[in-house]
Length: 497
Image (cartoon, rainbow, N blue to C red):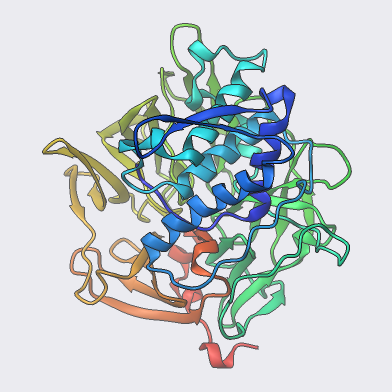
């Protein structure tokens, strides 16, 4: 299991506990896990045990987080209360379960899953949701097909409390220690941004020549916001907003980062995702559930009015790219990279499509997934990928560079001294250098890295404006960065206003 092990917001936990009490989700739930002696320990959730269950879910997340990050700071105490919103849908709760398990299980969890109380509660909740929803049959339920729906994509990745508590609230919220004050400003950037930092505590963008800026406009009306995507040109960002007090149906919005103006995007047909490649370039992926196959992915690419539909992909959906889009384009607008995946199959397929040919040619590689949001080099000669291989009975996953013409994959080189740091690669700066974000505790170094040798040059540095466990990731604007790498530079932290 590939895990991240970040700290989940306590509001997310409250929603998971609340869901287990709802009759429409099979509640009040009853489940069991194997104790140390192998006997089944039965758990139940009701009004009296809800707080204890919430604390157990938080404790599982914190224990794995502490072990993975060698963390010894005190965590925020969990105080149970009703969630801020009680209109969550079945699909939204299913995504909340997936997000919790991704961050609350260790890498060996699969070997002792039934002995983990939190895991078995989540499985009981998932079963209760599916069994009580007329759209699904427990015996044929396909989790990947649900993940490929527009409703799942629009659901928030993490549920965060948005209304500040008052003294009369049942919940008293004491934040974890955050270290010295961050020298960042709030508002908007002066120009399009090369990258965005998303986290449980907010959204920050890199203002070229200035430094970090915390976005405030999307939250001005008190709406819940999530599902952030930075446009390839860095001028705007897309996100999903849940309008507080105005119904559970979310809106997909786009904000101009410089002006702050917001537009609501047209609603897409069910099971449809749209990927932005810059002006005049986009891909639409429509997943069609079938009786025989798990799903059929229909991919349509439009470039300057020329619309091409690729041959149907039977029994597959899009492969997950946890750090960026599953469909990406090259700067020269010739190449499209599309990741496909199968249910319960760790070996995804990555297709590189030549849009300049009269009939789109496809070069396929198996066991490969896109990494980052700028995974395609400007000339399409290299891709940043996650390679999955089966070695000695074990699946090994490694960040690599795929040379598209030779089909050779080579691991990204790391210099001595950086092996134990947290390194994230948002994408290509040019045809030879990668953008790397190196985290040493709360200090962040943004670098240009040669993936063949590991040689690097620091472009900017800053102190993380949130706890490391609250970071969701960096999203890069490949068209802006690859056209003008100078946008990656910024003032030193001491000079940031």
